[in-house]
Image (cartoon, rainbow, N blue to C red; front, side):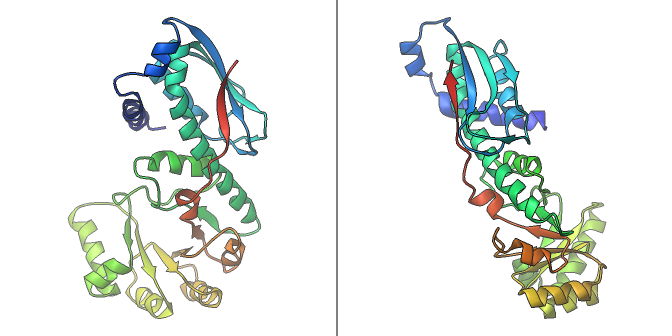
Length: 280
Protein backbone atom coordinates (compact mmCIF):
# COMPACT_ATOMS: atom_id res chain seq x y z
CA UNK A 1 0.00 0.00 0.00
CA UNK A 2 1.26 3.46 -0.93
CA UNK A 3 0.49 5.18 2.38
CA UNK A 4 1.19 8.68 1.07
CA UNK A 5 -1.06 8.29 -1.96
CA UNK A 6 -3.82 6.64 0.07
CA UNK A 7 -3.59 9.33 2.74
CA UNK A 8 -4.05 12.09 0.17
CA UNK A 9 -6.94 10.26 -1.46
CA UNK A 10 -8.73 9.89 1.87
CA UNK A 11 -8.13 13.52 2.79
CA UNK A 12 -9.56 14.73 -0.53
CA UNK A 13 -12.52 12.36 -0.41
CA UNK A 14 -13.51 13.36 3.11
CA UNK A 15 -13.20 17.06 2.26
CA UNK A 16 -15.41 16.55 -0.78
CA UNK A 17 -18.09 14.88 1.33
CA UNK A 18 -17.88 16.88 4.56
CA UNK A 19 -17.88 20.48 3.35
CA UNK A 20 -18.57 22.70 6.39
CA UNK A 21 -19.94 19.83 8.45
CA UNK A 22 -22.14 16.73 8.65
CA UNK A 23 -25.20 18.71 9.64
CA UNK A 24 -27.49 15.66 9.78
CA UNK A 25 -25.35 13.94 12.41
CA UNK A 26 -24.60 17.18 14.23
CA UNK A 27 -28.31 18.00 14.51
CA UNK A 28 -29.63 14.56 15.44
CA UNK A 29 -26.94 12.79 17.46
CA UNK A 30 -25.62 14.19 20.77
CA UNK A 31 -21.95 15.14 20.92
CA UNK A 32 -19.92 12.35 22.46
CA UNK A 33 -22.42 9.63 21.55
CA UNK A 34 -20.83 6.22 21.10
CA UNK A 35 -21.85 3.48 18.68
CA UNK A 36 -20.88 0.28 16.93
CA UNK A 37 -21.43 -0.87 13.34
CA UNK A 38 -20.74 -3.93 11.20
CA UNK A 39 -19.77 -4.22 7.54
CA UNK A 40 -22.48 -6.50 6.21
CA UNK A 41 -21.96 -8.31 2.89
CA UNK A 42 -25.17 -8.59 0.88
CA UNK A 43 -23.93 -10.40 -2.22
CA UNK A 44 -21.52 -13.27 -2.94
CA UNK A 45 -18.13 -12.33 -4.33
CA UNK A 46 -14.52 -11.54 -3.49
CA UNK A 47 -13.96 -9.05 -0.69
CA UNK A 48 -11.63 -6.12 -1.36
CA UNK A 49 -10.93 -2.84 0.40
CA UNK A 50 -10.75 -3.99 4.02
CA UNK A 51 -7.20 -2.67 4.42
CA UNK A 52 -8.29 0.61 2.86
CA UNK A 53 -11.30 0.83 5.19
CA UNK A 54 -8.98 0.56 8.18
CA UNK A 55 -6.95 3.50 6.82
CA UNK A 56 -10.14 5.53 6.35
CA UNK A 57 -11.35 4.90 9.90
CA UNK A 58 -7.95 5.81 11.27
CA UNK A 59 -7.82 9.02 9.22
CA UNK A 60 -11.29 10.05 10.41
CA UNK A 61 -10.71 9.21 14.08
CA UNK A 62 -7.68 7.47 15.56
CA UNK A 63 -9.73 6.42 18.59
CA UNK A 64 -12.12 4.20 16.57
CA UNK A 65 -11.72 0.51 17.37
CA UNK A 66 -12.03 -2.10 14.63
CA UNK A 67 -12.14 -5.90 14.58
CA UNK A 68 -11.57 -7.70 11.27
CA UNK A 69 -13.21 -11.08 10.62
CA UNK A 70 -12.64 -11.44 6.86
CA UNK A 71 -9.60 -10.16 4.96
CA UNK A 72 -9.10 -8.91 1.42
CA UNK A 73 -9.19 -11.62 -1.24
CA UNK A 74 -11.54 -13.93 0.65
CA UNK A 75 -14.71 -15.35 -0.86
CA UNK A 76 -17.78 -13.93 0.87
CA UNK A 77 -21.49 -14.72 0.84
CA UNK A 78 -24.69 -12.92 1.73
CA UNK A 79 -24.85 -12.24 5.45
CA UNK A 80 -21.11 -12.35 6.14
CA UNK A 81 -19.71 -9.69 8.47
CA UNK A 82 -16.30 -8.48 7.35
CA UNK A 83 -15.50 -6.31 10.36
CA UNK A 84 -16.92 -4.14 13.12
CA UNK A 85 -16.06 -0.57 14.07
CA UNK A 86 -16.76 1.02 17.45
CA UNK A 87 -16.42 4.51 18.87
CA UNK A 88 -17.77 7.98 18.16
CA UNK A 89 -21.09 7.73 16.31
CA UNK A 90 -20.26 10.94 14.45
CA UNK A 91 -16.93 9.50 13.27
CA UNK A 92 -18.48 6.23 12.12
CA UNK A 93 -21.10 8.09 10.09
CA UNK A 94 -18.49 10.38 8.56
CA UNK A 95 -16.44 7.38 7.39
CA UNK A 96 -19.43 5.26 6.35
CA UNK A 97 -20.03 6.38 2.78
CA UNK A 98 -16.36 6.58 1.80
CA UNK A 99 -15.74 3.10 3.17
CA UNK A 100 -18.74 1.68 1.33
CA UNK A 101 -18.08 3.46 -1.97
CA UNK A 102 -14.50 2.17 -2.04
CA UNK A 103 -15.20 -1.36 -0.81
CA UNK A 104 -18.21 -1.92 -3.05
CA UNK A 105 -16.32 -0.89 -6.18
CA UNK A 106 -13.09 -2.65 -5.23
CA UNK A 107 -14.99 -5.84 -4.34
CA UNK A 108 -16.88 -5.70 -7.64
CA UNK A 109 -13.58 -5.43 -9.54
CA UNK A 110 -11.95 -8.20 -7.49
CA UNK A 111 -14.98 -10.44 -8.03
CA UNK A 112 -15.07 -10.25 -11.82
CA UNK A 113 -11.27 -10.43 -11.99
CA UNK A 114 -11.21 -13.58 -9.89
CA UNK A 115 -13.98 -15.18 -11.94
CA UNK A 116 -12.07 -14.59 -15.19
CA UNK A 117 -8.73 -15.65 -13.72
CA UNK A 118 -10.33 -18.99 -12.87
CA UNK A 119 -11.46 -19.37 -16.50
CA UNK A 120 -7.83 -18.94 -17.57
CA UNK A 121 -6.51 -21.67 -15.25
CA UNK A 122 -6.04 -24.26 -18.04
CA UNK A 123 -4.03 -21.78 -20.13
CA UNK A 124 -0.73 -19.91 -19.80
CA UNK A 125 -2.29 -16.49 -20.38
CA UNK A 126 -2.44 -13.99 -17.49
CA UNK A 127 -5.15 -11.37 -17.08
CA UNK A 128 -4.17 -7.70 -17.32
CA UNK A 129 -6.00 -4.51 -16.47
CA UNK A 130 -5.70 -1.26 -18.47
CA UNK A 131 -5.65 2.52 -17.99
CA UNK A 132 -9.43 2.57 -18.51
CA UNK A 133 -9.99 3.48 -14.90
CA UNK A 134 -12.02 6.06 -12.98
CA UNK A 135 -10.04 9.33 -12.68
CA UNK A 136 -8.68 9.59 -9.16
CA UNK A 137 -9.41 5.94 -8.36
CA UNK A 138 -6.81 4.21 -10.54
CA UNK A 139 -4.66 3.07 -7.62
CA UNK A 140 -7.65 1.55 -5.82
CA UNK A 141 -9.03 -0.13 -8.93
CA UNK A 142 -5.70 -1.66 -9.89
CA UNK A 143 -5.22 -2.75 -6.27
CA UNK A 144 -8.57 -4.54 -6.53
CA UNK A 145 -7.44 -6.30 -9.72
CA UNK A 146 -4.43 -7.68 -7.83
CA UNK A 147 -6.65 -8.80 -4.95
CA UNK A 148 -8.78 -10.68 -7.48
CA UNK A 149 -5.73 -12.48 -8.88
CA UNK A 150 -5.11 -10.35 -11.97
CA UNK A 151 -1.94 -8.56 -13.03
CA UNK A 152 -1.45 -4.82 -13.32
CA UNK A 153 -0.42 -3.38 -16.69
CA UNK A 154 1.38 -0.04 -16.63
CA UNK A 155 0.09 2.31 -13.95
CA UNK A 156 0.21 5.43 -16.11
CA UNK A 157 2.04 7.16 -18.91
CA UNK A 158 5.28 7.26 -16.93
CA UNK A 159 6.19 3.63 -16.20
CA UNK A 160 6.24 2.07 -19.68
CA UNK A 161 6.52 3.13 -23.30
CA UNK A 162 3.41 1.84 -25.04
CA UNK A 163 3.38 2.79 -28.72
CA UNK A 164 -0.21 2.65 -29.96
CA UNK A 165 -1.77 3.28 -33.35
CA UNK A 166 -1.89 7.08 -32.99
CA UNK A 167 1.76 7.21 -31.94
CA UNK A 168 2.71 5.14 -34.98
CA UNK A 169 0.68 7.33 -37.31
CA UNK A 170 2.09 10.57 -35.88
CA UNK A 171 5.64 9.21 -35.88
CA UNK A 172 5.48 8.26 -39.54
CA UNK A 173 5.46 4.50 -39.20
CA UNK A 174 6.36 1.61 -36.95
CA UNK A 175 10.12 1.64 -37.51
CA UNK A 176 10.29 5.39 -36.89
CA UNK A 177 8.30 5.09 -33.68
CA UNK A 178 10.40 2.23 -32.27
CA UNK A 179 13.73 3.85 -33.12
CA UNK A 180 12.61 7.19 -31.68
CA UNK A 181 11.54 5.49 -28.45
CA UNK A 182 14.88 3.72 -28.12
CA UNK A 183 16.77 6.98 -28.68
CA UNK A 184 14.60 8.75 -26.11
CA UNK A 185 15.34 6.14 -23.45
CA UNK A 186 19.04 6.33 -24.15
CA UNK A 187 19.15 10.13 -24.22
CA UNK A 188 17.20 10.40 -20.95
CA UNK A 189 18.92 7.47 -19.24
CA UNK A 190 15.62 5.72 -18.54
CA UNK A 191 15.03 2.01 -18.08
CA UNK A 192 11.51 1.42 -19.37
CA UNK A 193 10.04 -1.47 -21.30
CA UNK A 194 8.78 -0.80 -24.79
CA UNK A 195 5.50 -2.28 -25.97
CA UNK A 196 4.02 -1.68 -29.40
CA UNK A 197 0.49 -2.22 -30.63
CA UNK A 198 -0.08 -3.80 -34.04
CA UNK A 199 -3.39 -3.94 -35.87
CA UNK A 200 -2.68 -6.68 -38.39
CA UNK A 201 -0.09 -9.22 -39.56
CA UNK A 202 1.49 -6.72 -41.92
CA UNK A 203 2.28 -4.37 -39.04
CA UNK A 204 3.55 -7.33 -37.03
CA UNK A 205 6.00 -8.13 -39.82
CA UNK A 206 7.30 -4.56 -39.62
CA UNK A 207 7.84 -4.85 -35.86
CA UNK A 208 9.64 -8.17 -36.23
CA UNK A 209 11.87 -6.66 -38.92
CA UNK A 210 12.70 -3.68 -36.72
CA UNK A 211 13.06 -5.37 -33.33
CA UNK A 212 14.03 -3.54 -30.16
CA UNK A 213 10.77 -3.97 -28.21
CA UNK A 214 9.81 -6.03 -25.17
CA UNK A 215 6.15 -6.74 -25.79
CA UNK A 216 3.78 -6.79 -28.76
CA UNK A 217 0.12 -5.97 -28.31
CA UNK A 218 -2.06 -7.75 -30.87
CA UNK A 219 -5.12 -5.54 -31.07
CA UNK A 220 -8.49 -6.69 -32.41
CA UNK A 221 -7.02 -9.74 -34.17
CA UNK A 222 -9.24 -12.56 -35.35
CA UNK A 223 -8.56 -15.89 -33.67
CA UNK A 224 -6.98 -17.23 -36.85
CA UNK A 225 -4.66 -14.22 -37.20
CA UNK A 226 -3.86 -14.25 -33.48
CA UNK A 227 -2.68 -17.86 -33.69
CA UNK A 228 -0.59 -16.98 -36.73
CA UNK A 229 0.87 -13.96 -34.95
CA UNK A 230 1.91 -16.02 -31.92
CA UNK A 231 3.53 -18.52 -34.27
CA UNK A 232 5.44 -15.78 -36.11
CA UNK A 233 6.63 -14.14 -32.88
CA UNK A 234 7.78 -17.58 -31.72
CA UNK A 235 8.68 -16.53 -28.17
CA UNK A 236 10.94 -13.65 -29.23
CA UNK A 237 8.69 -11.14 -27.48
CA UNK A 238 5.98 -11.15 -24.83
CA UNK A 239 2.55 -11.24 -26.48
CA UNK A 240 -0.61 -9.48 -25.38
CA UNK A 241 -4.09 -9.77 -26.87
CA UNK A 242 -6.45 -6.82 -26.56
CA UNK A 243 -9.59 -5.32 -28.05
CA UNK A 244 -13.15 -6.61 -27.81
CA UNK A 245 -12.32 -9.21 -25.20
CA UNK A 246 -15.09 -10.14 -22.78
CA UNK A 247 -15.74 -12.90 -20.29
CA UNK A 248 -17.64 -14.96 -22.85
CA UNK A 249 -14.78 -15.16 -25.35
CA UNK A 250 -11.64 -14.84 -23.25
CA UNK A 251 -10.84 -18.55 -23.24
CA UNK A 252 -10.79 -18.53 -27.05
CA UNK A 253 -8.15 -15.81 -26.93
CA UNK A 254 -6.20 -17.71 -24.29
CA UNK A 255 -6.25 -20.83 -26.47
CA UNK A 256 -4.37 -18.89 -29.16
CA UNK A 257 -1.24 -19.02 -26.99
CA UNK A 258 -0.74 -15.38 -25.92
CA UNK A 259 1.10 -14.53 -22.72
CA UNK A 260 -1.29 -11.81 -21.55
CA UNK A 261 -4.86 -10.74 -22.20
CA UNK A 262 -5.89 -7.19 -21.33
CA UNK A 263 -9.48 -6.28 -20.48
CA UNK A 264 -10.68 -2.73 -19.97
CA UNK A 265 -14.00 -4.09 -18.71
CA UNK A 266 -12.35 -5.11 -15.42
CA UNK A 267 -12.43 -1.48 -14.33
CA UNK A 268 -14.51 0.62 -16.72
CA UNK A 269 -17.87 -1.15 -16.52
CA UNK A 270 -17.84 -3.29 -13.41
CA UNK A 271 -20.85 -3.84 -11.14
CA UNK A 272 -20.21 -2.96 -7.51
CA UNK A 273 -20.71 -5.64 -4.85
CA UNK A 274 -23.63 -4.92 -2.54
CA UNK A 275 -22.79 -4.28 1.13
CA UNK A 276 -23.76 -1.92 3.93
CA UNK A 277 -22.47 -0.55 7.24
CA UNK A 278 -25.17 -1.28 9.80
CA UNK A 279 -25.43 -0.02 13.39
CA UNK A 280 -25.49 -2.81 15.98
